Image (cartoon, rainbow, N blue to C red):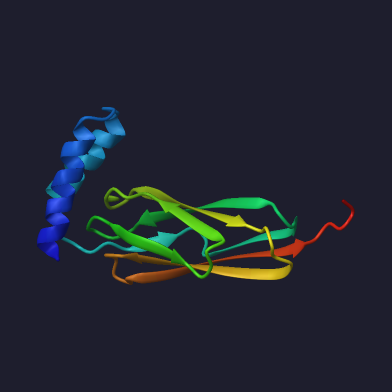
Length: 145
């Protein structure tokens, strides 16, 4: 598993070299190449978000922000949801210690009514390998069409 991770980091670095050369990307690449030891610690600023009362048919988006508070690079392997109506997008490059990343969740309320709770399971190489996030919304149907 460690060899695969190192190979992926090298490939990401090579492919990333052909993209923009911002200072932050250069720092991320050099740190990810240099630091393959240590333990990542995935800490989200919040673990739940309530959209409140929304109309059926809306697409709701929320960005969960996290930080790697460990001493090794953080790599998110995947993020799965409890429902196909919820789609996660997340940073795929390694997050060095002390850096932040984002995980965006989009919930399509079409076809839903009432109180809705959806979960997002985030799997990574962190000291706690699975973190569960939650979004809620009260979906109301507008029958005045």
